[in-house]
Image 1 (cartoon, one colour):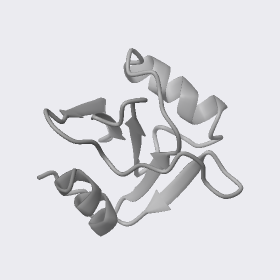
Image 2: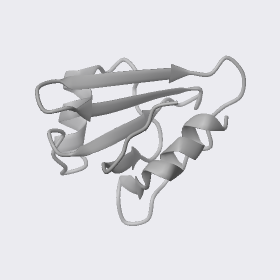
Image 3: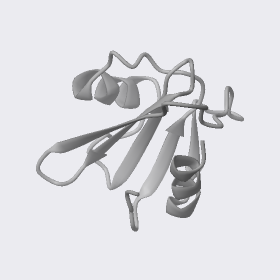
Image 4: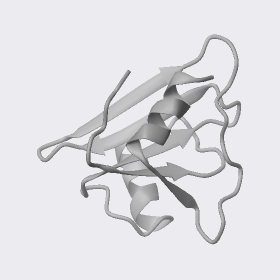
Length: 101
């Protein structure tokens, strides 16, 4: 399992078009969420079926794009967040999300 220490985690509520790659997700982070994709944070996105996740992370000299696809089941995912398009999670909460379909 991935470990993201000392990084803020932003979860994108609802579903995201999984055809988006690094550039598309970065534009979404900047435009829709008013956040900086180059910050010390990771950004987590889920598809409509809730069986795929993408995580975008800037490591100082380039982006990492992680993908997890479940063969069975789906992720527990918020469809709406209070007062925002994103929800902040701790690294521990992200670990629970990634580990339990």
